[in-house]
Each structure stands twice: as C-alpha cells, then as structure tokens.
Length: 372
Image (cartoon, rainbow, N blue to C red; front, side, top):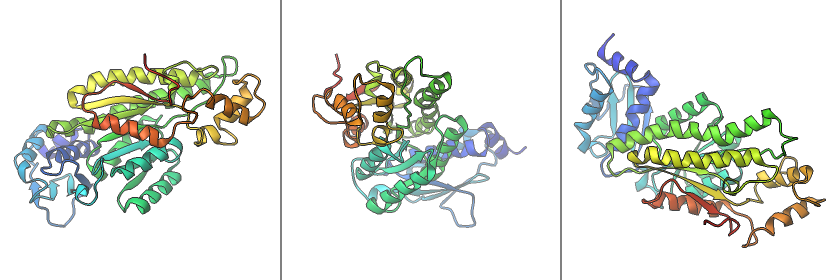
C-alpha cells in the first residue's frame, strides 16, 4: 500500500478524508473567513496548487503541507489539488452579498415547512447560505427554489435526511462539506409531536417521538460538530454555533403531552452538556424555547394538527371546537399572540452574535414562560 493510500485509509476512507481536508482548507483561507470550498473528483483542469501526498503517512502530514502555503490560500490560490483525492475550489460569496450572516453556511433541519421554513427564509434574508434538510426532499427542493429566486442563485440547497437515522445524518454532513467545505450555524429544528396521556400512549409512539426530538439532536450535534472542530483548529477567529429549537415544553411539563415534553427537557440537558464539551473548540451550543406557532402546520393542520389532537384527546377541559382550543391557548400568552419564525430567528441571531453565551435555554414565549 502506498503512503497516499495509507493516510486515506487511516482517515477512514475517501469520504472521511474529504471531510477532514475541506474544513481545514476553509479554516486556512486568508481574507475571507466565510469563504466556501467545493470538492470535485480530480479533473484535467489546471490547479493553482498541487499538494503531493504520495509520501504522507497520515492526515497530520497532509495538514502540514497545506499549512505551508496558507498565506496564499484564498488570494493567489483558488484551486487546490490533493493528489489521489480530488480538487477543492475556493469561492468568496461574502463579496457578492452582504448581511449579518454573509457567507456563513447555515443548516436548518426540518426546514421544508413550519418553523423550519420560516427560520430558513429569515436566515437567507440575513445573508446566509442555507441548507434545507428535510425528510420531505421534494418540498425541501421547492423551498430552496423559492429562496434562490428571492435572494439570488446559490442562496439555498436541499438535502433529504431522516434525522433519526445515523447513516442518513452522516451522509447529510458529508454532502454539506463537499458543497461548502464546512458549516457555521447548525439549527436543529426537526421535530414531531404526538399528544396523549399515559393510557393512550403506546411504546412505539413514545419511542418515535423520543428518537426524533431527543436522539436526533445527539446525532446532528455529533456529526455536525466534526467539521466545525477542524475549522476552529485552522482558523483562530472561527466560532461555530449549534442551536436546538426546543420548546416552552422543555421548560415546563405539558399535560397529556409527556413524550414531547420529556424529549425537550432532555434536549436542554444535551445542550448544556455539549456546550461544556465543545467550548474548547469555540463552538457555542444554545437552545431556543419558542411558544406556540399557531399558524404553522404543527398546530393548524386540519387533520393532524395540535388543535385537532388536543380537541380529540380532551386536553382542554370542556372544549367542543377547534376555536375554543385556540382561544384557550392564546389566553395564556400575555402578548396575546403566538410565536413566529421571525421571533425565533432573532433569538438565533443573538446566539450567533453574542460571543459570551453558551449552554443557555432562551424562552421566546411572549411572556408565557419567564426565567427565574
């Protein structure tokens, strides 16, 4: 086995090697902190820099060879060929558009509808490059198309993912690294809700809700933080953000909704624990705990929405119509309205821009839940 094949194998194979090289190149970029790095198999086109890896025994030696011309990467060097692996193309979207998130790569899971779609749209308006990841891939493509139309081509891409499946999550982040070289903001938004009391709830339903609302956050944090760690290693100014879209039900128990509330309570425990572990890599981890988004499909879907579920399960005593269920919940909010994606995105932007905050669960509930 050649040295080159040896270091690729030690890295975990070709996909893992690409996932290790692209974020390093992105971190080494000079004068363009949020530049993008796109991977393609080695082509016949000329490259600005060819890195000879034939004699490299491991990934650390490859990193060392990349660091040698680091001052020119992103300036005179825009195409880098790693022999035996492929070509990496550098671009600077920051110069093309401004905004608070200009050039940042932002992932929104569950981004094809509801809160996720609204958050993705607001992040795009702030200048971010958005990855719409959703189990409903055709709908994710549709949303990405709308964002590209409204904010310019290259604003958004769609990826199909099942956040409860480890291989699907791993593949999603491999695709992101191949397209952009890394990640700056991970919004873990995908979630499900199945209401029901102890007698109605089945083990199958309980485990499904827990897998999507709790276990999936572990998976996206595990695989999403990998490229962030590499970027931080090579860029002393890099800061990454992981934001879980939690719920006010993660701050206070929810009657006949324990599967959802339990997963959300656990999510805050993960947020605090991940924050302590990842802080040394300059990755902040926070949770946003929104109030109810009454206009979104989670609540208003005429067949599966929470208004229908809560009416059918008797969660609102005496309610005989969806309107009565709606009135019951609005009456609980001091500001007399539901939470919107704009409200949540403002909290996300706070998390990104506040450099001295991690491990927090931030309520955005119109005064319904107040910190003690």
